[in-house]
Image (cartoon, rainbow, N blue to C red; front, side, top):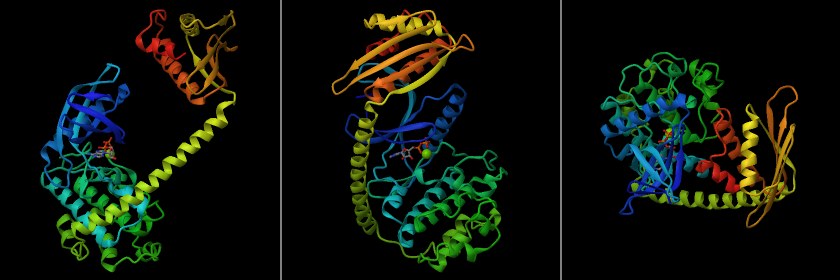
Length: 432
Ligand SMILES: Nc1ncnc2c1ncn2[C@@H]1O[C@H](COP(=O)(O)OP(=O)(O)O)[C@@H](O)[C@H]1O
Ligand SMILES: [Mg+2]
């Protein structure tokens, strides 16, 4: 088990571009979501760190029942793995949204009634109102960032792109939810972009599909909105029992020109917004039912996946399979493979043109026969590393290949003395 300070890490809850989110428990057994900044390539490191700190500062200032609360953070923490190895990381411990993403409920159990959609829309608007009052704009309102707690109350998350700037100039967010002025790379107001995205979300809640792919006039659906061909637009959903006031509400939220759209106080005064909502208890009961269906489907899914995996493995077992990898400094690589082979008393053949090592791996349930050839490419002095699976598990083969490739990427291109093994390298040897 991996630990980070006083937290024990459990399953992965989700993943975004910059981070991985783990379920953790503290020393009292309380559950939190730990957002861990992912290791980034060098050119992205700065961006990732800025996003991380930006999120911390925004969350510290926000305090609302429909916004995830930051509990703790550390930009200089250490993870300790079960084998004792350590890893530096930056984390945020956040209130755990046990109900998961709101949209999983739709994709697995179907559209919401307008009343149920209104219940969650109120909560989303409340969260946005709190943010906007504090001067923050979210700029990444989308399904993956809208979560539910264990009582199925909405919790807005992911403040990596939140900003206090009056006018934004950088295009942030996800295409399907971006307002037209954002997509068109014009300066835009974050509040207006947030409200536009909220309307896209509302539309999906009620119809189970997005209103358009992108809010651009080249989009076949948004084109209808931008040019006022509303009859044609709503015709697409004519099989759904949409209320007149819903249609009017959405229409006033997604105009091409932001000035024509309702402001937050205008939308709150709209007839649709003020329609009936279910009680908390009704929502709880209805979502418990929905969750049961999801769990049933998940069980079936994982059963099917396992079955597929076993069948795929069977089919792959006796298939010969080759992967190539070209390296610049082949002699170093040959030395390395020789050292690995010698350390493990594996026979190898070496000649001027050609080097080969054959590996037979016996694990509990399978044996694999893998051949590694280092070939000289005729047109230049480069060598090509040829991995051949003669028989056995493709999974073992793939992981061995991945480890060698990683070694080659890191070490061979900047030659090192391969005879002195690092831990990582001796791991590779042991896996041989
Ligand atoms: N507090 C939380 N509780 C439960 N799941 C969460 C929580 N925070 C994030 N997640 C899950 O992790 C995913 C990624 O988190 P997010 O904060 O959006 O990261 P990123 O900034 O990388 O997009 C979310 O879409 C969600 O599925
Ligand atoms: Mg996210």
